[in-house]
Image 1 (tube, rainbow, N blue to C red):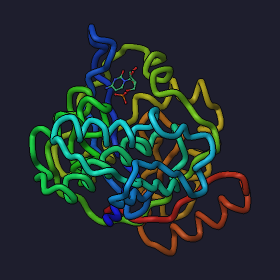
Image 2: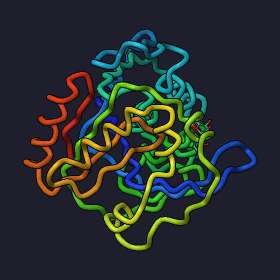
Image 3: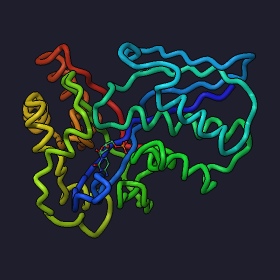
Length: 275
Ligand code: C5P
């Protein structure tokens, strides 16, 4: 049995540079990962199975139409493994929320199968599968702080500090394709030179304006995070609606989480750290 963590992905900065002829967008982004997320468990079994548990299990489609089973099938096509697998996805990350949930789950499935069947995690064939599954899956496969270019699949590692972070989602799912389609097509320039914190602090998320137009609750999330004592940066991740805040101390993060949970008991809050 293999238990593979599928941590949440953050875009500490996300600069959209150009709309491409293939409908995707060229971007420059600073990917980071946190210590918590979903979990994928792979158990060799007599028959294939796929079960979803956890607080966000409802609303996810099962066998055949989930990135997890698509990752499993793609791995088998490439690496030719014949074993049947019972796969359990324990879903703790909100769905369609800008923190990579489905991409993280697909990447964890690929990592777990690579471990089970002895493929190298840096095998270019594994990376090629990740790339076909989605723009964020290669970053989630590597799972460390990196600059992403192209659709997000051209990756350069960069060192990053371990900082307390709070993730907040107002319970509104937003479509990534719809948010990208709302980008105003104005190139506001590249990410900064320098270390990860410099890039994050000097950066922006160009998908915030179109996401806020679709989900005005993001305004409220960012206002609450920006008002919290000890915040060094508050920003939306990916295409939203989850926002993150980086804090000076774990105590400041805990106080902010308590304040937000009291003000908005229906929202999802995760107190964690940059990994
Ligand atoms: O690659 P993925 O399937 O995750 O992308 C979902 C949608 O997000 C794409 O169909 C596209 O509309 C949009 N997208 C984009 N540019 C990117 C990544 C995603 O336009 N770099």
